[in-house]
Image (cartoon, rainbow, N blue to C red; front, side, top):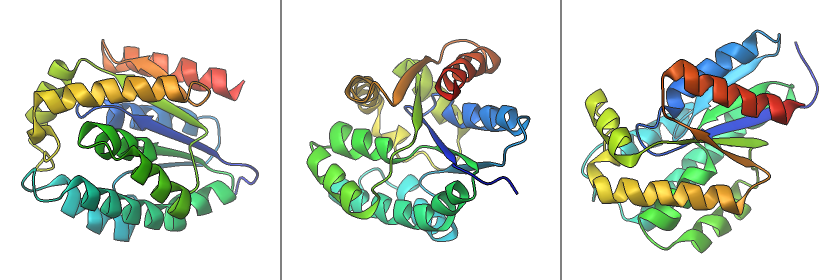
Length: 209
């Protein structure tokens, strides 16, 4: 078993940006280094958090208020942190999470409502951890929404909030990258999955060096 300090990476972006594909490709590449790699996702990643995920990503767009969503996401994240992320980092693994707290900052803290102070207060109280590096896949909202809806995954609640919502999300992630320049990197999401993966890898390499 590899021991030593772990590395926590997160991938963020609007719905349909390709971050899930890029998370998987990055995990595969890092596994070749001989390190243990834990690929996970939010909402979800642990048994309890996956149960909460089912409440959040499916159903009518108006089924929850932004305030209720913040509480549900924080509860899921706390379980995820306790049961998967912290133990993996403690044993020296590389953790790659498809979304983390930045999604709540942008989705509920900015795009759905002006609740950023509430998001940050709950995060400080109940989570208290940030990724070492966050890669934000930057994608045109029109193209991303078309891709996301085409998946017809049954988890389209946020896509169903419409084009204006996706545009607000994109602006929110750009603002986040400006707010946390030491941690966040904007990655051009245009081109093939392999082309985007090369850009992701360059950013990770720079961080590791």
